[in-house]
Image 1 (cartoon, one colour):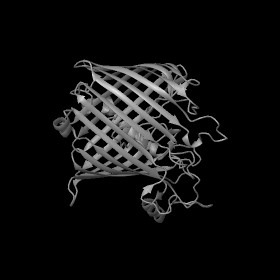
Image 2: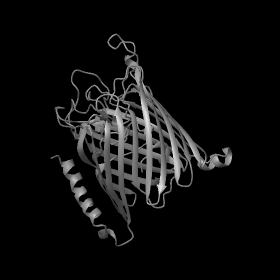
Image 3: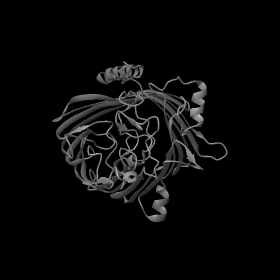
Image 4: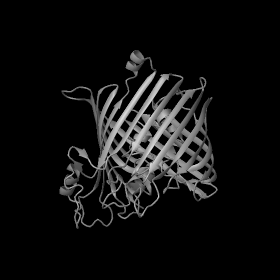
Length: 446
């Protein structure tokens, strides 16, 4: 068993014992929050017996009937926080299976926070803005350090930095068992504006030849030689991605100047491998807008693209299996050479009920469109979803239905289902009534 797995399972055992005996944390002023979800889904796959839901933490779903549960807890006290989450599912065409989704131990001292275990580094304000890191793949075994927030010298505002190193336990790759190194720097000059630089690096792995030296690590950090072509690749040659994020949330101004209840927007520009002048090549772009005319209803739109003139996003000359973990894209689930459009309307039906309607269009294969070897046109799908949520005492019930229709030449038939109906029952979070906030509209996980 790999050391990363041993560490994650060791933390899981400790947290599981704490979950079974919550009295161990009863003393003091700690915060204890359990997590429990039951889900039942009836679906029809477009091809074969399996389908995938976007940002589903690395799971294949079964055509026909499927049932699942999630159990976990989070505890915080003073400088310590621990969290545990486990998911189990069984379906008509998939055997019963379970997976530890989260087992994280974090300790904070002053402006420093150190964490280790299994979970997700997550940097995006919305799911569709998650080009570098998302909840689409299985959770990562990683260790990380976060610094801040601190006051920014000279310019004011707040600065915050973060770095992590994750082990990708994935042997079904051309380069097996690589490492993923992430870095992020955030500057918030005001409460409503955030500017951020994000970076991920896939490096090393089984069969790469020479071991990395400190000189190689420094070359990786500064990007020296990244993207160079040649018959022999240096050990420091890595798959690098860089993104810049602009996020605004001027809610007070929108209320005073525009008469809106809420307003939020983001723009993320990302690229990989090397630079063309001042901009990185093979760009991926994500933009989104969320508008709440009143507390009773809201609408949102998002556009995401990972296609450019021949520079394939999520592809690398060495890591040819792509920017993936166990077959799942680490970033946006549509992968490279694709574009996605999303629009949604959200409304409160009462104090304890809400409704949502979403339409999604995804198209892939722009760089292959019309070529002789691929005579069919670029393909994708249209998808619609309708859902209702209700706060019922200590539980929240979510009912959703949806369908999709293939368009053109769709080469990824495993996503999504041609039709589905789902019922999800979750333990209510005390003090958190249903609202049209970022999580419900944009899918930001807590």
